[in-house]
Length: 353
Image (cartoon, rainbow, N blue to C red; front, side):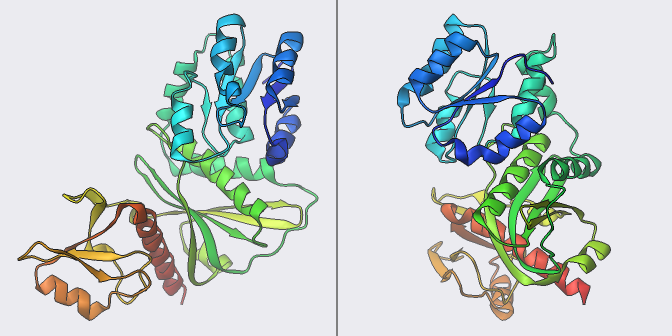
């Protein structure tokens, strides 16, 4: 990967990408940053960079129009990105008219992959995109991705913060082809920077495994029974790597599990989703509001509000009445996924005993 001119990044708050820029420079890519439209255009006209990163959600809305202007007048490669993960920003990315998109969070890995596609002669953007989408989602590849990313982001001189037992994880669900499971992060010290780094790594891994158009993954926090990390690694089929930097430690785990499948279905109610009651562990506080539809009147009622458990006897009673499905609000679907992940990890804990 070689660029004969610096990579130009237009960024309103370049300090947000300090880790990304550091890794790019470590990989031989010189980075030049401009914050404003006028200075960015002046740099482009004078220095003629080969690759330009343009945000679609800059406060100066004229910057979002740069890709179309440059494409008509100059021969260069444009990548668009965004800082925000909001639905409106994702729509801006998709409607930008640029094929080369980096969905938030921005990462060095994805930038370098786009640059690789630009400098490899005879390879079009669409060819690269299709090859990425059809990569076989095998555990061996995922293991290699974890190792590569851990090496990229670790600082060899950093003394790691030891993690022996963990009861809190940051989690992303992985569902791609035959590969289903949970990507988890445990931290020596929980800091905003540590959580952000986990999300960047998770996004890179999930994007690499995705076989369909990617939207930013949802992340959620899990509180589980304390897990002895070393015992878990030795007894469970988990892939794991460790990233050490600035005196902190991030442990990455991938746990294959069919529980990661969503199992949510649309209903006659536009704002509700349906799932099988069998997916719920009894006697556990619910992270979402639980509804059922009465069999005779078809009336929808709130059975258990968020924070209350569905007891085993209640679940058995519903089954005897022929009620085998329940509903939840669409905007709480991520909490349903978190509930399944939390129950799965608690079962893993029980298996250690």
